[in-house]
Image 1: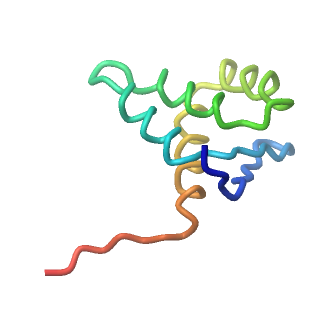
Image 2 (image 1 turned 90 degrees about the vertical axis):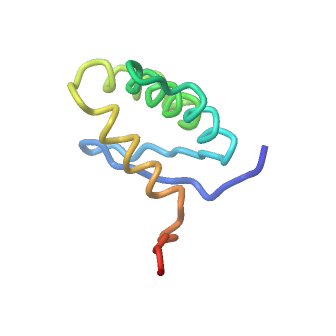
Image 3 (image 1 turned 120 degrees about the vertical axis):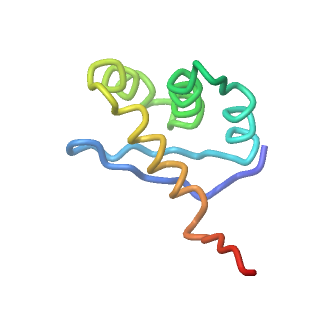
Length: 89
């Protein structure tokens, strides 16, 4: 597993540290189905969170509607390290 720079996302007043890898993201894409998008995002977040923060994250994700998708989006963007993809004709 390749080490990546941690992505820190603040939820409320708590900083959560994620360390996603290319393999983590590929697994997420492979698990996604047309009728199942939130569960793979949840799994991605719980796989990549700092182990000692997992319980607190799971509690938040299961108690706030839409939080899974919001946090996944931020972690995914942060994992790209600011790289932008642009199509040129």
